Length: 274
Image (cartoon, one colour):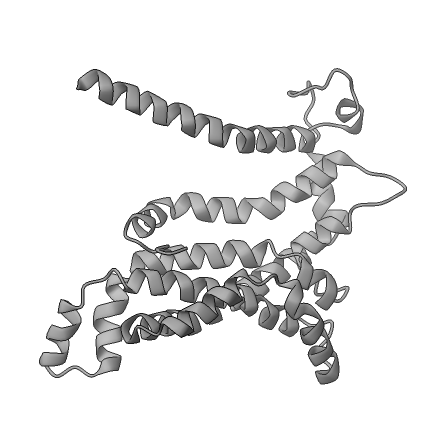
């Protein structure tokens, strides 16, 4: 029995390494590109660890490409879109789960699966008519198309797994529906809310399509700024890799910090049916 457990553990470890190794390899190669001069990036055979580190690739990104402004834009857009998505999605998920509104859940699922490009042209015409093009407002509203269905769907699955006995006891004690949601359901749902928050941040932060169409010169987000570094005349791999890592770093740090809450939310059924 002990040997079987050891073999199972080794098998799981091997499977995990096989699944994760490509992502780790790509990340290490991007890190290597960002720390090398262009001469080393063009060398053959390829050099993984250079003799000299080109730290100017990182400093040059902020000096020459106004990444500070674009970073702030991404923070504003992602923060507002995630906050509004939680404000709308958590109560909506609770209501759909408690009312067993299957048809509403199907609508949310369809909205979650529909590509963002499907909403782009109507939103573009609407914001152009309202005179909001080139500001951060269209991007925030457009990102809600992505974040709200994600939050609602996760919270539906999570609230369906939470016990009703505590809520029924609170109702017997005289609590109204709002008090039950605020003081009973929300504290229990914290792991699920954490998972919804992380996923909403990731999808909003990495969104490229809405930013490239709806943003102006001063309201670009980081993914759009990285794309604008591409040029037909010259392609500098070092600064481009450094910019890509800068875009990835906030989400990576957030995920590492909240990994325990994410695991707790996933194991508690926060993505049931997803």
